[in-house]
Image (cartoon, rainbow, N blue to C red):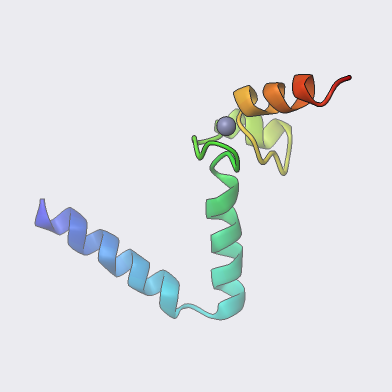
Length: 69
Ligand SMILES: [Zn+2]
């Protein structure tokens, strides 16, 4: 079990010590993997179909129906 934590910490350390530009790209990737509203992971298929999808299907539906008059 300790190995998993060590590996995670090592990965985090590596991400932190990478160049700023690279870090920014990785940070963006991490952000885009999760819905900006509820934080649930956005399915790969959805992200690929809608490049730049920021919300999960539920939140997107809520946003679209909620914004209609
Ligand atoms: Zn969501």
